[in-house]
Length: 350
Image (cartoon, rainbow, N blue to C red; front, top):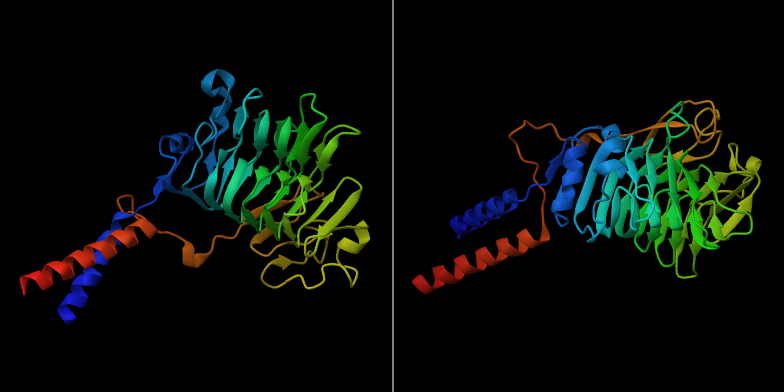
């Protein structure tokens, strides 16, 4: 019996070891993700994609999952993708990822220039799935032409159209600008359209440039219905601040939302595990920041410099020829099938 148990463990280990996430080292690797839209990927280092301005006769980077949705996973491991250019003003589903039901976490996009038509954003044009600890931002001191997102309909700083679950994410300094002639554009600093998605513990510190009298534009979300779930988010933008408690947007004065806060602001917000205080006001002008961020003081709101905390227990220190092991539900099923076949075969032999 004990031998059977050991054999079962051995079979499971073999099956599990087959699963390995593809590693991304440079912008070419990133672009090649379009060749397998169901795979799992991990980012191995920061990537400078400044060369994309010359790609595809000036169209730049081709969004991953633009023609067919991306359904795999992407773990940025706390690294940042810099200087990405996408210049596709006549195309839909534009962003680092065009569209898909995916898992994406721990990745940042910085100093980008992104142009599209409908469903346009920094990270995902049309999103369903799960996103955690991601950001879009313009770095302090970078050229004014950097950190822009342009589109006509469903345009957001982080997500264009959201029906998924997003947590612990932000847009700092990445400006969203309307293009085209539509009077109902759905443009927001974080998300363009959020009819039934969930966004929790996230914030915007940037600007939205639309048009006076334009329908469905907002500092956080351009459009949202009663089916959406907003929990403990906030934005500080232009001349109006607001935050969401258990779903309802509540406008506040600057002084009420910056440290030291009014006693009835941020009630029941977790300032130990989720949020951090900017006590001296030299990080985010006194507005809360997410606890997973580390901070370098800056001179102004929307120009804050953030770096992702790379969690030690999740760091990967591997040699070039070593595979990163991921557990996959399908492989677990395969492993169980192998075990069943083994015991059936064993029983017949008796």
